[in-house]
Image (cartoon, rainbow, N blue to C red; front, side, top):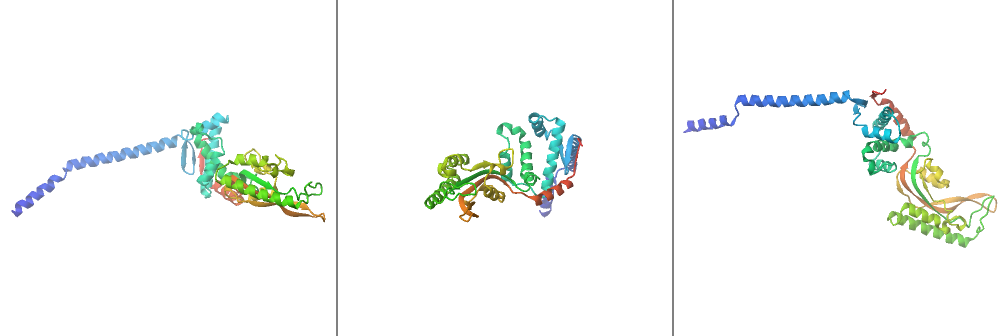
Length: 320
């Protein structure tokens, strides 16, 4: 019985294994598949390398891959395909340098920059170009020589004056000068309005543009109580420097020190007042706060690092 049992077990075990010829065939098929995969990958890489237009830090770019970017440049800026390709090549080098310097912008910074471009859903095919431009602006605009000392900012300044009763200079004296009761009333009104608008903006009860228009139209918040003379403003959205859109030096100085977008707390500003001894002294004269949609503080130290990294970028192009 024991012998028969062992024989039967052995027979079952042998039957469960495929014939050697089948195993050899399986190995051959697997080997062929691996070879085909390697050949296909090699063909793809060789073809891509053959069709490249430029290489930046080991990454190969083909004409097809950069087509949305070159198409945008040729269609909307009127440059030739050759010049468009050179521009994309240059921008990709700047992006690579930023990565080497560890200066990649955050997702929020990229989102803010994209919103400041002309990109819309109707231009979705060209989004790779807008993404590249947004990356460049987020990293390099704050380090550009023209903005190194002032940064790059966009937003709104909201000013709530109460200086009509203290405004006196060598050339002019306000008709309300010296009215202490008016000063106290104006100061209280300015403070209440500043807090009210700040709260409304925080809770989205009013838009930034609506708040600006309303404040500028309020005669109690104007120069000598005249509507339309309030110096609150929208800044940084034109072609010139953001600083040119602001007439109050203290507000400009405050903005230039900010590093993050968003609403600020209420600040107190001062004006220079000529005293009875004909000497000017600073006195509290207005409240203000700002909203920054984009805040890129000047970064001269980063500029040096980026320039150094740009020299280390390994790149070559068919258009060199």
